[in-house]
Structures are given as structure tokens and as C-alpha cells.
Image (tube, rainbow, N blue to C red; front, side, top):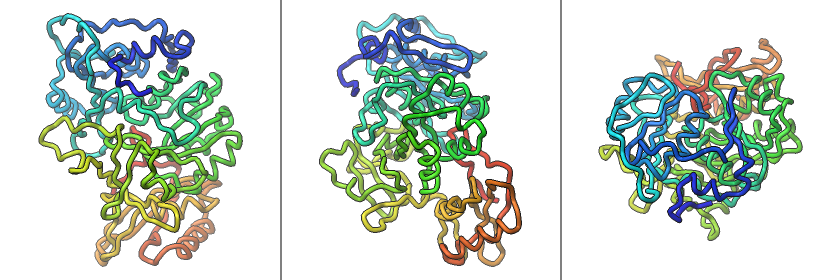
Length: 439
């Protein structure tokens, strides 16, 4: 439902399908949408930081603030205090919604005579430095996606993402505007406990990163859910994870989507294959235009963010309105494949190695659950490739030998890991992606 008609989110929900029967369900509390009323008039015309620890409280704040606040700034848990101070200054925050001690004082403002076009400010998920502040509208966040059968269907939705990050916010808006209930995740909840809880609620549609889904398949609670629709985004969905999910949840439609905080949701792929068809370029019926420049995917659509809030930041789009995603793609036949991030290249003696390309080979081995490829300094080549691997049935020297042999068959010598270390688990960022750093 594109909201270009002047309605606020609460107004759209009030007239939406099944509104009286829609629920937001957290770990220990629930909220019926029919009971939500405008209680945020004291934030009229303000720039409001939405920073409660609890996602249910954040959900209610977002519904009530849209159309009343000048700007809502979505602040997920875990943002360092120094970064938060910079965010408050850049966004000119003069009110804070929080379930903790964080408060800002200010005069009570009169409610607006009509709904205003609230700016939705999202933080980029970069791991170093102060995150960029990305300006969206409700229309760009809630815009439709035709590709794929999963979005917009009735059911009970859930997501591993926090709704204050782009991936979670899109699910939040599309579930609610589509007349669905939504079960919220909890950062302190284990994968097994979350699966048990959403399974008991009868979840039908559920989304997360490929790393989330690899953890699901490793969990004894994976059978607690019987979804009709499974979607991945945020990382490269290689063929191994697509095949494993398709086999494990045989009754579900399994898809993967490309989206970023700046570019928005560009497309969804539901044919069970890694990458995306070359026909996605130049489609007259597509909401997103694609092009490749210097090997990276660029996107222009109505779901693209308007700008970075900090005027000193680099331009968000090029002169033609395209976002440079920084994601490297490679054409093979009639299909394009994601091969890694431009800023993640490992230089091995002058040769370029993309960690995700090596991980795809590692993850294809039946003895590997997950893997993380990184650089290790070398006095000879500057860096060598090494890998951390989570073994499916436990580590062994024989498994290590099999994995290395598979790499030698599929990759040039400089891409083959110089060392493989078996680990019990791999770290993930707050946004659900593998935590990447140099060894």
C-alpha cells in the first residue's frame, strides 16, 4: 500500500483489512492494533528519537508518532553512547521515547491540524564509526513489491530482525498494512526459544538473514515452525542455504531479496536459485531500475531513500538518481550472482579475493554448517585467506582435508584457505549478519 495520499500510518491501519483482529506480540506482552490511539501529541512537530529497549514499545511509538512528529529517528539497541550523542545532534532531536532513564525536556507542543509528512530516519548498519542517518518516507518504506508471492498474503508474520533496522521495519509495515499480525523477536532470546514461541503462535511468514537461517537449521527447535513462506535478505544467499531450507521446509516458498537501507527493497527471487535473472534489467513492469557500473550493482526506485541527513555526508545517489550499493555482481550466462562487497576484498599478493566467494564453496560441503572467511597478515603476500568453520557433525582432520580438497577443485590456489579453524559458533552483528573483521 503506497502511502502517498496524506494518511498517517495509524489512519491507514484504522481503515485497513482485518485491523480489529491484528496483533503485535512481543516476548511477554501483546498489543491489539484496534486499541492503539494517538497518545503522542506532546511530540507534535518534534524530532523524536525512538529508543526503547522493548520492540513492542517501539512499535506503538512508531504507529502513534507518524503524522504527528516532524521526524522519527529509529535507534536500535546497542548503539554506543558517543554515537547516540552524535545522532541526537545531527537529527536535531528534541524528544526521546524510551523505557529507560534517557529523556529530553521540552515544552508541550500543540497537535498538528492535519497529518504531516513525517521523516523516518534509519541508521546504516556499518560496524565502524558513527552510522549514517538515512532519510525515508512512509511511502518509500511501505512501497509494494510485485516480485515474489510471499509479500502481502494473509497470515501470521515474524522476523529475526529488529524493527528499528531496515529489514525489520519493512516487514513490520507490510505485515500491518496487509492486515496481518506480527510476532516480534527479542535480542536476549535464544534461537531455540524464539522458534518455540513463534511456532506456538502458528507463524506462517518469517524472514531473516542467511546467517539467521543457518542457525535455525543447526537448532533442535527448527521443526517447531512449519512456515508457508521463508525469506532471506541482508547477506548473499548461496545455493547451499537455498537448497537446505527448501529441503527442510518443503511446504514453504523460499525466496531471497535484495535490499539495503539506502536503496530500499529492489527485488525478490523465488525460483530457488542463487543470484538473480539477467531479465531483471530493463523490465518495463519493474518498480526498481538496475544497472552495473564498475562491477557494482546500482539501483533507482521509488523505495530509494531521499538523502543522508548529515549534509556533510557523501551524496546518497548519483546524478541519475541511482544508489551505488557497493555489492559486486558477476554475470554467468543468463544470471547475475552476488560475489561480495567492494570494501571486503582481501589482497593476496596483488590478487583479489572476495570472502563470500570462498564461503560459498565451504558452505556447499555437506560437513559444513557455516563459515567465515577473513584475512590474516603475511610477510610474503601481505595477506592470506583463512577460514573459521562450524562443522555439522563435529570437527576432524579428515573433514578438514575434504574441505581443502573441495576448495582446491573449485578455486585458484590464492583463494584456497591457508588455514581452517573449527569453531563452535560464529559471531553475528546486531543486524543478523556475520561479524567480519581481520584476523
